[in-house]
Amino acid sequence: MSAQPIIEALEQLIKLHKGFNKLASKKKNIIIEGDTDALTALFIDEQKYVKAISQIEIKRQEVVQTFLKHQKNATLNQVIEEAQPEEAEILQRLKIELLEEVTQLKEQNELNQQLLVQSLQFVNLSLDVLRPQERNYNYDKNEQEPIRKTRSMFDSKA
Image (tube, rainbow, N blue to C red; front, side, top):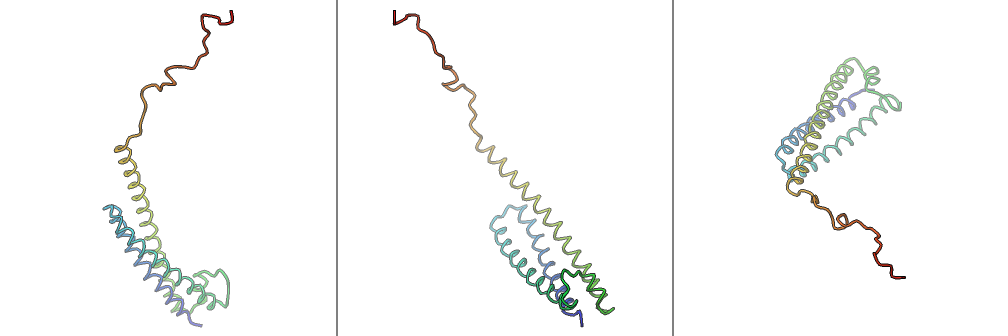
């Protein structure tokens, strides 16, 4: 059996991950600029990529199971071992390329997360500066006059 459907699925995954990486790079600039409308639009685009990647991944798992005669939890290395030598070379190259794209995406997402955290910290700091919390430097009325039971100098029962 040919590994061509697996090769096609991997090529599609690589193509989608490259597009996803471009979006992650755009996101960095949008976060730095603080453009929330553009960020919202970008999230919608990212969801499309996530959905497409999920669908291709399901397809890839199915063709891998078919290729390896319904073996569960098969790895790409197992596919490479079972493939013809020409296809094995292509699969190895695609594996490396996909790993590079996924690693790049992971690093970009970590950077974007750090930028978002810093942006939120800046916003919180700005809000604290603009709206300082009330601090009562004077004593409250209750604190000024402690509750004490005093005896009168005159005994009313006498």
